[in-house]
Image (cartoon, rainbow, N blue to C red; front, side, top):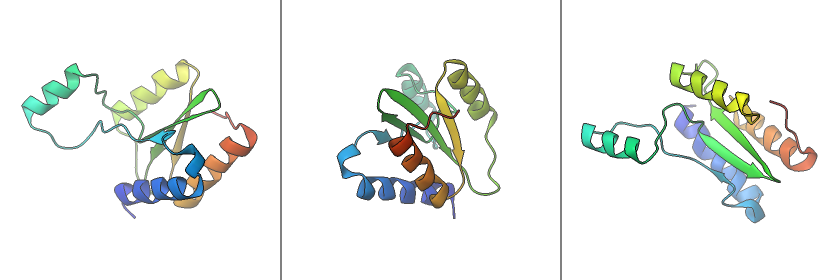
Length: 116
């Protein structure tokens, strides 16, 4: 399964399982191919390379969720952003399957999981 497909399935699972929490899990479109003009525009608007695929806001906390395939590796920008996020005290997770995503979300919602 590709990372894009994993992200789509994870989002749909969340959207359908937790309708009362819709809008609290979202993707920041910080990647993808852009021409130089668009890239410059987005940079001035605050786009940051390496930002996690999902941000989940729940019960006063923010959780950063990076989705990777079984063999996927973080880019250097993602590693750098993870370091900054953890230094600020936020939770950051690398998820490699839909089942792992489901368990993480359940743990956060049911137990206030803040493992970082």
